[in-house]
Length: 268
Image 1 (cartoon, one colour):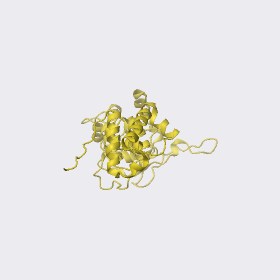
Image 2 (cartoon, one colour):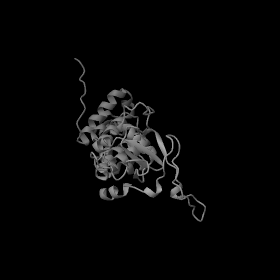
Image 3 (cartoon, helix red, strand yellow):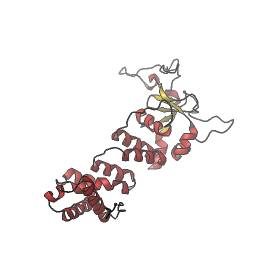
Image 4 (cartoon, one colour):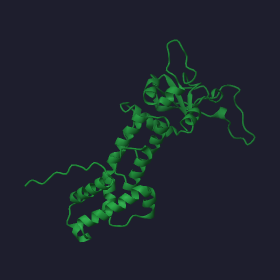
């Protein structure tokens, strides 16, 4: 599967990449490259490429095309974070010209990737870049970056995104599904499972399907233990949110065999 990704992810198409003009201007096709299909649609020779306003860096040494956008970044940064890209584009040696990516005419073409997602991934690789957007990234945007990072085997990017996702308010079922898909630290799911444990309403069918049989069985057992511990609904109301959460997390830690959080003992 990985081998297929490597062979199909990056290809070059010299005949379809035109000559660039000014920085913000679209790239025009070479002379005599104009042709139209019988339906009148524009052929690949007419595709206009644009340089990304932030991540086409003059100090970069590798040009990458994603969709119709050109990026220019530091090859060493990519190699340090992605063994996939290192296998596609070897390091640049003194006196030797790379086969692809050395100018706008022959960029490294990454296919089946969104240019928006690639720019978000670069914002994680270049967090201190002065023009990197400070806008809050949504959960869906983070998940798209995670999928791209997984394809490129960028483990450090995945860990960074996991930390940022963990700080966001994510509905418990959604967070559990993301953590399961990307094999993140399950101990970070303790509060999410505890929230489900305290839920008064029964779990819906959609929730059950998202959790999977193994997790659903443990959540159901945890919910039963929680009710036995705190008693009826009226008794639960006498508990503070912090007390209820501490009880639920301790039960989840036991049922899921997770590390139990440290609970401060009251002073005598």
